[in-house]
Length: 229
Ligand SMILES: [Zn+2]
Ligand SMILES: [Zn+2]
Image (cartoon, rainbow, N blue to C red):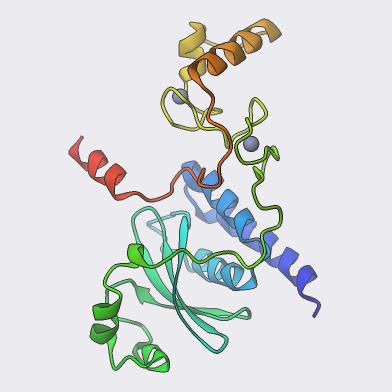
């Protein structure tokens, strides 16, 4: 199979779609998520299909792929953004949007392939997309490494790595304002300040690399908290 060339092409296509279609503050999460599945044709087809037909008003990043069922080479998969869920059919050649999860399907007959009479019967078995297990990438390129700075799981990122999580605000350390606050300055100017920052960071307890560090990973708790404010 001449897969890997095609795959590289597919990955760069998706990167491009992300850079045009996804809202600025979710772009990094989208790219990181893509890296995780960069050797998985099925997930790549799914993401291409999603990002090429992205509902214009949403501009959201994919942050989870759920495995639902499989029949021969055809997978029934769920796709989550921070706020929406979708149902897809996918093979390693192509993906097809069936509809928003839980709502009327664009292709109602597709579920018959998996032995469901209709959407109602399907939803009885899988009422919540979030309860379906995560679809694991076929082959991880470098399991356990930060995709940006290559820190191994449990190790600190290189200072300045955009994946690093801020121990003060739990945001993205390269973007949040905590470093200025901690140092009491408006801009970082010299080596000394950087060293001081590193010292403060270590004193507070840096967050080492772990696989979950996708900034928009969905969590019920966070969403509820957000709505209360
Ligand atoms: Zn890193
Ligand atoms: Zn912070």
